Length: 152
Image 1: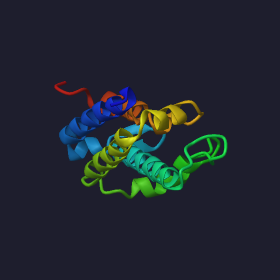
Image 2 (image 1 turned 90 degrees about the vertical axis):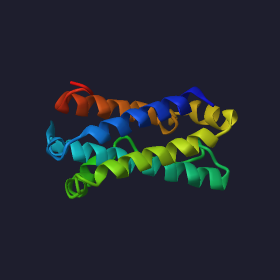
Image 3 (image 1 turned 30 degrees about the vertical axis):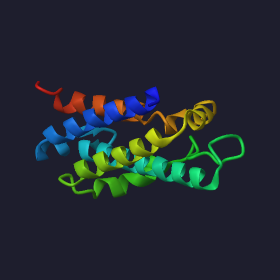
Image 4 (image 1 turned 120 degrees about the vertical axis):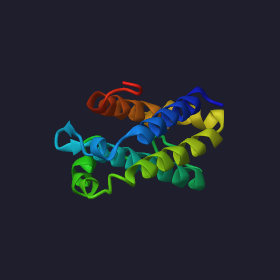
């Protein structure tokens, strides 16, 4: 298994453990910028689900992320800003299952990729589509800073 697939799964296990210990009160703690813990989890669920869908499309069409393929998202777009009102409506008690299921689904897909497919993606500008763990770790750290680390 590719190292990034392993890192993804490790981050998903950390995410699952974090979600499992969050109380209802912690899910609504502010993280800054108008975001709550629940919103950050919904954000991760959206992006993991979106990257899974992008992967499935490119794998189905035989076109991997490269110069001839459109980018999964434009770095200048305002996707997160547009999502904020929807993320605020998420049921904090249900978002934990959603985020873990989305992470597991994209992990399973990444784990099925061949070394050549992974190399093709990592060789382009969209390596983050394979390296989902980086995005998860960023928000896990953000949430733990707000609620405290495991056992703390």
